Amino acid sequence: MNAKILIRIAAALLLIHLLGHLLGHFGWDTPEDLKMQEVVDTMKRYKADFMGATRSMADYYHGYSLMLCFVFGMTICILWFASDFIELARKIVVKILYPIAITYIAFGVIEFLYFFPFAAVISLLTGLFTFAAIIRSQPTQ
Image (cartoon, rainbow, N blue to C red; front, side, top):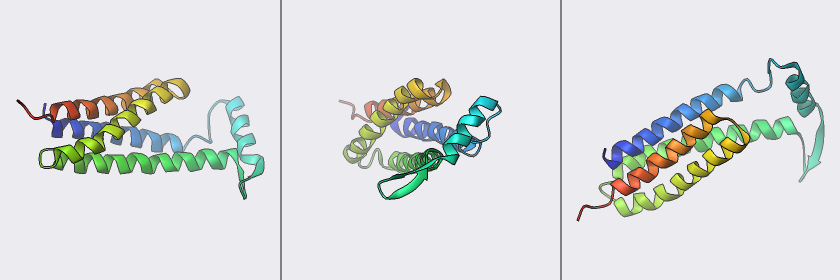
């Protein structure tokens, strides 16, 4: 498989992750578990001052989740655009791909520790396919 295809697979995996994240984002505050609903209600109810803003933990949770949606979207775009230039400007594209690969492998580890396996596997695969693209992009001797 050539580097362009590997990068596009990574972008597609991340699109799946983004869609799953969006589904979770818009339903996190209405869990079926009654005890979890109590936690959510408490997160929404109590607000405190922090660095000049009064927010609840639910506000922070919601905001971080939205920011992650945009990070996923931005990364999908960067990967897709990078796939078009991998042969033309390999050195530049590889410099862009390294931090993406490392970041998504780190996301995968964090997701295994704090979230759930499906998200973790998708992030790890995104990082691994990106690394594979870097390797496959190396000029043949």
